[in-house]
Length: 493
Ligand SMILES: *Cc1c(COP(=O)(O)O)cnc(C)c1O
Image 1 (cartoon, rainbow, N blue to C red):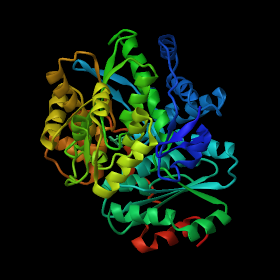
Image 2 (cartoon, protein in one colour):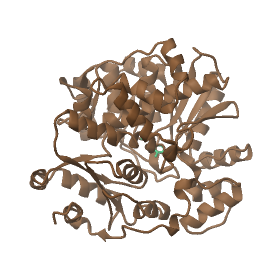
Image 3 (cartoon, rainbow, N blue to C red):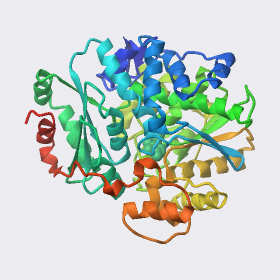
Image 4 (cartoon, protein in one colour):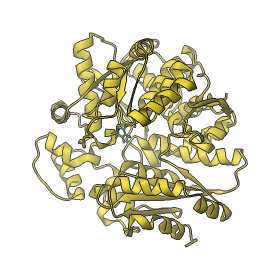
């Protein structure tokens, strides 16, 4: 199977090449030229496998250069019980719907589903393409991605990972999670400034050719975990198939019935993986795109106009506070098959901040996607309402639940709705406590204990005793000193 770039379809790469390269040179993203079909019998057969088995089967359809044994080994290691507990992606039936909980991994957020296996795919892809250098992963994080990438790359042979976080921009718990990171190949450093300062610093390092040359001589190859690498998207296709099998096994639907998936969306990666699953043959009805107050995607799917000329809101579901949803570009390419059209949209987006798609494309988008958004008040109310019914949700999941309820009220569509649940409520203790009517205050780690006491639920193991762990990385640098920090961490400064 070949991979094409969304902005230059004359490029054609193997899977390992696409993963090794990450982003295409002209700025495009890679995606397979066609989707493999999975028939009803094959879907049933997945039902007999455990999660790593399902992952190896689905990913194998896309990764010709990887043997079945190789993928089985990566999946078994990535989704091992020590990292994810007994089931990496359990489906919980609640209130006429089901929640697909993707946050049982080492950092309690769904990014672990991709970032636990992506480093293995990346290092193997580099080997397969003949790259001899070691990988240095640089990440600027506003919180969650940094920790998930650190856990994913920790002690992976042939890699080093350096994470920069804004000293004033992350929560107490997020900071502690990163500062106490273990592993022999990790580095974490604060940047005096906000997320944009950290991100601009990393971008400047990536585009510094002199520095790149110096590092290449020393045997290092720079890559990013922020990027929309195919190796990060592919593992996400698996849990849609897995959820379907589990829904049938739990008696929530029968083989062949269509399910709807409601996905809290930011960068459009998660929901796009669901679209791939649907077009591979999984019986999916609607993919419901759930937004928060930054509802640029809901507006786009309703009107066909993508317009980022609007205020940016900081919400209680911060991982969805995004105005440029990078992976939407992949959907546009997959639907139009035209790199020229995608280039035109993306050029408009960077020059005017907006573009609009044709009426016929909008119709096709609306055949696959429904959409809606939840205000801050609605999100908090949804958390409180569901808590009374015995289920505790984080604010991102709550956005999706609220949007699913709106959809069920207005559409008359009675197919089973699966809410993709993306974070543990313990990652957002202050908003969750407020939403369930608790007014206690305290530091991040105190609130973790408060949430456990008030709700009678257990603190997830990765967040347990955080304040007692050794803080290995307490340094922070000026934004102008980030390059020196990289050189020091690589032992070259
Ligand atoms: C990253 C993230 C999202 C958004 O996922 P996308 O793939 O960017 O759409 C939603 N919820 C949580 C908790 C996240 O960390």
